[in-house]
Structures are given as structure tokens and as C-alpha cells.
Length: 430
Image 1: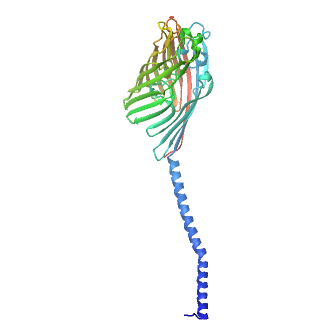
Image 2: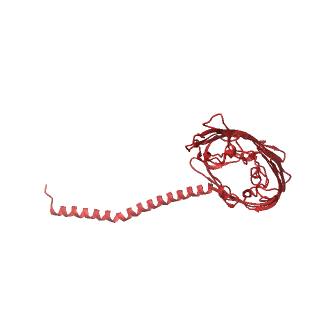
Image 3: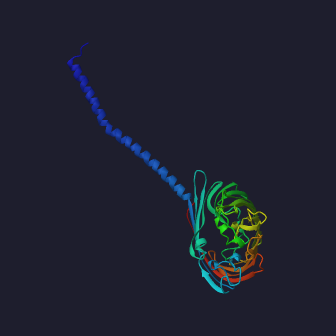
């Protein structure tokens, strides 16, 4: 059927009008779509801001530290790099080694600054600590310089970084102003990865730690053959503890197992290579009694001296003349450490601490007669707290060194006065 020209014109006109209506409606449609998109974006942004604000409210950063002054008088003499601490191993091994007796000391090396963060996450709370002080050791011994104490993080049952070794019980340290502390105590901040399968009133901690040890070449120290012997540590140290806590205090049993090796790199007729296994147990406790706390520990082992607070070398030399190829051997030295202190709170202004400690070394027959054999440490103090963040007071200290086999012994008395000003602030949190 043929369409008439008039009908065709009417159809074309209707199509044009429909197209114009669609074109006219497009801006309104686009505006509506844009409004919906903007509203959705604003809602999403508000949700994200609320989540961020909630996270920020729960995240907490604690800043803590102290400025501390130490002043005192030492009746004897000691290694000048350790002028402001009591360490029996640093007392003279013979008459006049460190000059004449009697010296005044002062410093601020116990001052410290630390940061602790508590961060919420989908896997639980992340705990971190970064702390340093001004007490130089190693190449900086005797200096007032920055020294790292803790750089450690923890999430759930796992932790990593540098902090207290599980072989140690930090709660054995008494409320004293002397910095170094009891010589018979296990005291070591080490790099480690730890697993805590059990947490709570009964806890279990297992760790692999950075190895390390030292040796005494004894009477053979000047032999050139020993210059070719190099230490090597093929395995990490393994440490663990189990701890039970309650209102009465706590008790902890810890253990350590380690491997130490040394290789003779020289071409002499002797083969001085060797190895030793280090091991030890540490039983420690805090027992509350009225307004006081007893702090004590007993540690025994072989080749664990570098975990002790103040003990000499891990490896000594033993004579082995029956074997011409190995005329001397390296052996892990036995060590016994004892700690017993009592902290007492008289009232909200006054506290006292009294106690002592001892280290005894099972020396080998290849060590020199003036090698360190036994040491004693003791103190008593009276501290005044004018406010909760400030204390000051005097402390009387004693140390004694006894050599291996030459009958030398030396005593050292000190009187120390310290003042400590502490601070703490928190950012964030609920």
C-alpha cells in the first residue's frame, strides 16, 4: 500500500517531536544520576571517616621516661668505663690495676625515653615498644650516649624484636638506685622471635634468640696459634619459660640450650677447632608478704655467662696434653648465680630495699690464676617519694671480687644518692 505524502509528513513530525523531548529530558536525567552518585560518595566518605575516627579513638600511644641524677663516692677503685655502677667483674684483679682508691662520681646515664603503642587490627591488638637510655656500653662504654633497650612488637601469640630474654625474669630486679643490679641474676635483652602458646595466669614462652659468647685464652693468650681461632654460631639459642602468677606473687622456671663452635683457620700442626653445648636452668620468684615483696632466683648452667648480669666468659681453656694434635680444649664454664632481696613499703612516702647476690664460676685449669672466680653484691637503701613521679634518697652498696687461684680478693664500698623524675602521657585510646 502506498502512503500519502501527507501521512509521511505527519510521521516525520511526530518522530522529531519525540526526539526533542528525549534531548530535553537528558539534563534532568544526568542531574538526577549525578545527585545519586554524589550522595553515595558522601555516604561512603562518611562511613570511612567514622571508621577512621573509631580506629583513632581505640589506638593508644604511651610516652614515658625519666630524668635521673646519680652521685656518689667509691671507697675502692674499678674499671673507669664502669665508674657509676657496681660490677664485681670490673674490680681490679691485682693491686693498682685501676689506680689509687677513692673517687667521686656523678652522671645522668640512667635517664631514658620510651614509646608504647597499642594498635587495633583485624587479628587483634598490636603491641609495640621502642625505648632507649643514655647508658653507653660496648665501644661507648663509660659515655653518656643513646643506647637501645627495646625494639619489639607483639600480635596475639607471637612477638619479634629486641626485648627481655625468656630465660630472664625481669621482676627479680630489686627497687634499687644502682643501675647494673644483682650480679647473680639472669639479665639480657636480646634479638629474638618468640611464641607464647599459653597466656594468662599460667603462661609459656618459647623463643629463638641471637647467639653469641666470649672466651678466655687463659695462660695461652699470647700464643700466635690462638690468633687463627674464630668463633662461629651455626644455630640460634633456644630459650623457654613457664610461669604461674597469682595474688601471692609468681614463680617461674626457665631453661636455655645453645651451641658454640670455634674453627682453627691456621695451618699449624695443632688443630684447635672445637665446640661446646651451653645449657642452664633459672628458677625465680616474687613472694608478697604484707607491705613487702621477696625477690629471688637461683640459676645454674654451663656456658651461659653472657646471659648473666655480671659474669665473665662462657668458654675457658682446659689442658689436654695427652693428645699432641689437640693439646688444649675449649670447655663451657659452669656458673652458679643467687639473688635474694626484700623490698618494703613503709608508707606512701618511704620505701626500703635490702639484699644480696653472688656468682660463682667453675674455672678451668687453663685459665690464669687471676681470672675471675667469685663475686658478691649487696645493698640497702631508703627512698623518699614526695609525689608519685619523683623519688630521691641514699643507698649503701658493697661488692667483692675473688680470683681463681692466687688468693687475691678485693672489697668495694659505695654510697650513692639519686633523684629520679618520671613522666608518662597517653594519646588516643578509649
